[in-house]
Length: 180
Ligand code: HEC
Ligand code: HEC
Ligand code: HEC
Ligand code: HEC
Ligand code: HEC
Image (tube, rainbow, N blue to C red; front, side, top):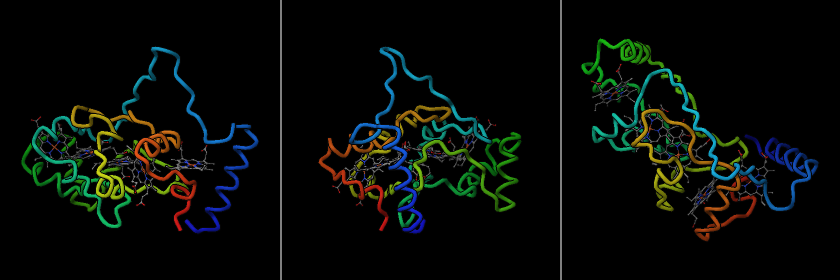
């Protein structure tokens, strides 16, 4: 995103915030009533992929989510990684046949995104995982136990800032909002 776009966007957002009369500081998440938790919404994916099944086989998170340079994204595994096993395992399953077809066409499985921050937020997996040593589970929950993933940890500004404050990490606006 260009700097001009970014500045325009952030100004519009700040104006929106001011008009909505949000108190100084940062937007607060609405609190769930006591004892009630928002029901998890499992995300329906194009294939019934299970983290529980695959992590139990001994495959590490980073074998599939490589955090390739420049390190912003954890990323999704190339279909060829899957086919190393699925050329033979469950090859007669319609799901695996779809996977094999996409792989042979050089196409990616259209996975639905679960965790996503807006474009005007600067976030890097490498900074958190490699430099700061934060575990995947801290931000994504017990993925290895899940058949189906859903967003179980917030990616709100309040959640980012709360962890930064706890870890004596900086919380200046331009840390997360100025890519320059
Ligand atoms: C065999 C490859 C593989 C392994 C190992 C694996 N994943 Fe995944 N991961 C995937 C695939 C495929 C998806 C997309 C489907 C889905 O969301 O379930 C995914 C999705 C995710 C997502 C959701 C991404 C989004 O859309 O926001 C997170 C978070 C994640 N994985 C974390 C982990 C963690 C943490 C581990 C280790 C405990 C791990 N994964 C191990 C293949 C893998
Ligand atoms: C190390 C080998 C291995 C790799 C790599 C692997 N899988 Fe699997 N996968 C398995 C095994 C084992 C099963 C369970 C088979 C069974 O239920 O008998 C399985 C089951 C599945 C199933 C359920 C199939 C069905 O119809 O029951 C899907 C879908 C799947 N894998 C997708 C993937 C995807 C997508 C990837 C790449 C991100 C991947 N797998 C990578 C070994 C692997
Ligand atoms: C400090 C919190 C944090 C940690 C630690 C973290 N993630 Fe994420 N993850 C996020 C956020 C925030 C997003 C959304 C990023 C975006 O929209 O650009 C995300 C997105 C993802 C995605 C979706 C695709 C992508 O790359 O944007 C996957 C897959 C993922 N994370 C896997 C992992 C794995 C695997 C680990 C551990 C090796 C991990 N994450 C560690 C916060 C974290
Ligand atoms: C689990 C705690 C935790 C969460 C959640 C978290 N961070 Fe961080 N973040 C850290 C730590 C620790 C550092 C390292 C600070 C330092 O350099 O000492 C850091 C560093 C950063 C940096 C500076 C990176 C660099 O390379 O200079 C940015 C930008 C950042 N975080 C953005 C975010 C955003 C955006 C979110 C929310 C989507 C977020 N963080 C969520 C703990 C967290
Ligand atoms: C540690 C990272 C971090 C810091 C520091 C931070 N923000 Fe944010 N900010 C975010 C994230 C993440 C979002 C997106 C939240 C979401 O998607 O719900 C956001 C969203 C916003 C928005 C849009 C609000 C909305 O309702 O979507 C504005 C405006 C904003 N930030 C301004 C600021 C200002 C002003 C500061 C300094 C006081 C600041 N931010 C500091 C991470 C940060």
